Image (cartoon, rainbow, N blue to C red):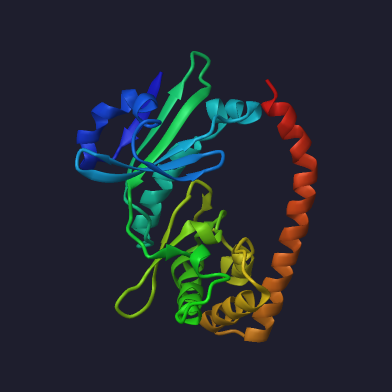
Length: 256
């Protein structure tokens, strides 16, 4: 059974939704593929970014069937929330779900316009580039002024999920992979450093980022470096522990 919602500005694409399971594997070029797959596809004169989500494991099938919106639907809704707050993200076009007779998701997709960019933050960290410090400074100010002051927390704020392009006065940033977000979150003004903990950069780069983030907040740079370092260390330890617990469970869940 097909379920979807579409941005009214792109109604011409609607007729292609029932057959997306057929044309998605055949069309376009893949730019990311681990569990989920992201493709750039030309359709009806639009350059699209189409994300096909992997089939949820057993527990999430139950959760998404009755208790929670799917990742595709949340991506679509969160994009509009970001736009309302004047936070850049690729233009949302549609979410699409196929469900079986029990209400379980079999396939799901999120479609947005492809957004041109120079690189992601992953192309900044660990790289030799003249503008690195300038980009880190502008991103730190973006994180504070555009996200955390507005109560927005991107729960997957990794370096691959921030698109970067040059702008007239400062570097411009756009958020992707936005299915896990929190809005109107209280406490970000005090604990915004914790939202930067997923960024995978060298100690020097993280110290620069922390210093500039503290500058944006008008707080002590040294204290900022200590805070981000502590959040980063705690996150790494938690992730290691979580992986040791969940890896055996996932093997059981995906066993056929």
